[in-house]
Image 1 (cartoon, one colour):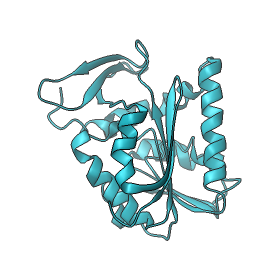
Image 2 (cartoon, helix red, strand yellow):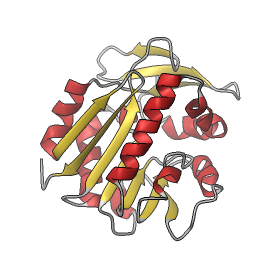
Image 3 (spheres, rainbow, N blue to C red):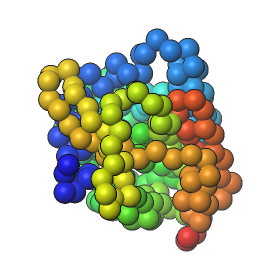
Length: 224
């Protein structure tokens, strides 16, 4: 088990990059319907917005914003993920990519009025949630709009779920197609927990929880 539960995420996602998007193509009607609902909600929420996307990965979610957002800046710590994102045929006048740390967003250039963090929240240690949200909101500004989505815990899916005595976090044991084995920080939240975490930071908070995914949208408050 890693001493720092988030320390191995860049290595894990660098290994996972070539196979990452396969999970969005799983032949599961419920899963596909919820993914479509997420896309529709994002497009509406970000219409005409300048979006900072944290942990953009391969740009899978970024591509769906092109028709409605004014522009998107996708950041990720993994060079391998960003290489796949940059290979997507997306208009450079609307989409830019940058290697950057989700906890150091002050280094990201540009003006934003919206923030996207899909499938990142579960990788934030519970002890750093306040740090991440404060930095994220500060970078996009008060009154900016936010959208986040992530996984609901489904027994037997995505590897064995394990805990560590004394830790607030949960982890997944995963083996990738290249044979590498990883222990990955992966926290899960229900609607009540999401509301308790996000209400102090937000206005007009909407929380949706499906069978496979949850997604939230809100406006940033001046301060928690």
